[in-house]
Image (cartoon, rainbow, N blue to C red; front, side, top):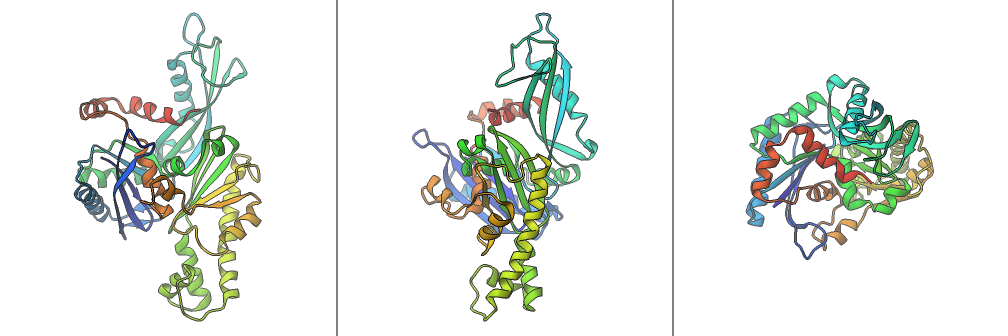
Length: 382
């Protein structure tokens, strides 16, 4: 069984799935969800509580499915997950001037030095985006092309080092053998975005309880990964303050479940203000990569707070792009096993497990970290 674990800002979700040769996508066998307090804006502040939740999740999935765990993949989605574009260059090393894997690695190594504040960051993914040889762009595979000076534009997806250390501490304490750690936005894009959208240019926005994540694709390659320290809980607090009611009542009103009398106009004013603030922050992130109002496939919105009233209206007006809110896409892929779009991140992780045997797993664990990461990131290249 493949286990995907998403440690979110409000809860821990996990999915157990298997591959079936007769089914195109991983088949979900079991799910687990538990609210946890040891998380703040997605970062672990109580390692012991998270450790216990991870252990409970794996035990529950194995008990429900009747399968042992072969691969475990973890997603990252906390505030601080971000990306940078950095250029690196090197001289082609072969005597016949043809580009090799070693040349690409050398150029990426030089680019690595240019990542801002690299001493305090853990590199999660290293994705080559664009190649230039002797000043000219080279589309597609550059291996074997002849030239002298190789330049590689690289996307580095990073995570705060202290947060990564806290996560590893929890995983070690839970005695979980981890196959890979993946940026959450990249994982959830697998079941939620089509190749056509990724090629044209699309943004995937996940609005969670305390964190909003942003992923932008173009030409089938990620351009941007970013996180904002705002989410559905902030909307709840706004409603509680604006209407002078309890947080519990505010949450019910936000989700459209409340029977309490309230002013619909006042509620719309409160939600619009917060949603406009989120859009302003998203626009700022788009401007970093010069894609403001320039994504032909528009914006796909998912996450636990994506169904908030007025969201589609405000996003369309503020971001000036087509908007699609995820509803039953996961249900279609999983034959109605997963109905809530909040499971997309966990489910996406199950697509990324290596297709190998138990003996191959041992070999993988003995392989160097650099080679393992390189093997993983090739899945995202065009």
